[in-house]
Image (cartoon, rainbow, N blue to C red; front, side, top):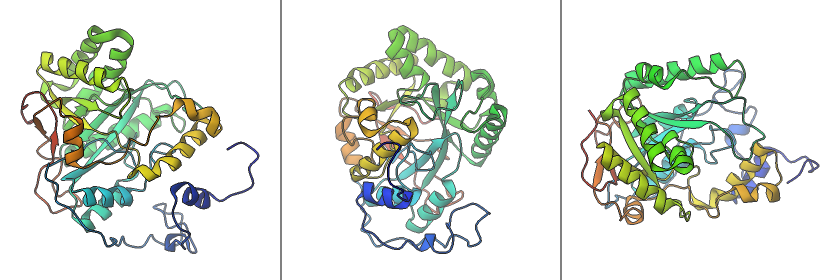
Length: 350
């Protein structure tokens, strides 16, 4: 991929990179069919495809998932993610796009149709000096927040909207300090996040002592019952050591731990598209971006059984926020998500 390619519509490039057959998209006839009010034709109602919904032997809710509304980062439509989550037997799925709720309307519609409990959240980008397009490894720190109830949803929406306006340019939200975020986001659960999260980043740069300080800062800002340590295993050689250290920090601080897969696409087959998106975001060729990318297609949805096996070194179970998977606004299920994690059975956040 370079800068002198023949003109290829993005829809054709996405189809080729995703390995999808060429079909006429009904959403693309006469209008884009997106959510923008500028289009003259409304997006038609979601119709669930025929698939076999499984019942997982291990209850598991994926709490960290990006759709393609995390522009040039996520590689699957919200509907694809909901369908794959239901096929795998997940008890719930959280959508946590970057700095906004852009994908939740389509996600909620699909989840309602296939009876998948939903959780809504966002991954906040802290400390951005400028928009990060053109960067192979974007800077800044991430804070993953999940709404526990409608009030939490409103608080996240209000906080993100203010940050987007404060940045005064697209792609550079400016958030207040961590204590101010804690005051503004009372009805949320905070996960320590991916390698860009404040705690994992401090662990990588400054070791356990620095990570413990960052974890204390989160606890001071959000209270102990709203902070959860997140473990992610993408088969990177350093994942095991990092997860061991994070689990030890959680034990020392008396915090719960939770396993996620930091999902960026529904299935492994979407990795080719994710790679192309990363190259476009970084303004690099595929060869140039290769060294910055994961070595394998690991950032996809997984079943509870696979996650339990992947995190067998951390026996136990963490039960998600009591209000997270209730029926607002898209499902009628009253089941609560459960995630296999933890060295000891932690308490449910209140």
